[in-house]
Length: 194
Image: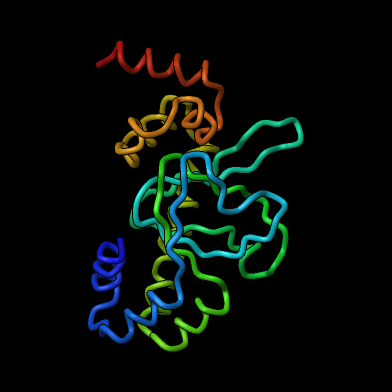
């Protein structure tokens, strides 16, 4: 898996030397997760910044009534963490769980900060990632507060077509903030119009 990891960083950080990539590899920990295995649990401190090289994770919160609220799905070549917990050493509001057998590279905060200091292009790249993620979150929030259930689902299909066959319907419904019954009705209505 380090070849995928290496290609990712070579594309993301032009001019990355073997020496600098070796440092990135040295500061990360390869973890193989089984389906349903948790890397960060709500209430614990999230100690890892996670790069997914293979598989699929989900970030979710469980409310007091036991309902799960999925914030995001994290597939290959993507990063995740609970940023508030990771950077502030506070209890996580999220659980991060593998939906498929997955391989991730995890970084602790000290090592990640050291890498950012020693590889300035990594720091720039992370800022760009954070900006893109912020825009994605803003767009999702706007869709969630201003769209019909049909529009929410169509937005999901357009932006995450690869997840339709990988994620159960009840999880897609949770991500979209609707019941499974509503999602099933929406899908039936859309199929009728196609």
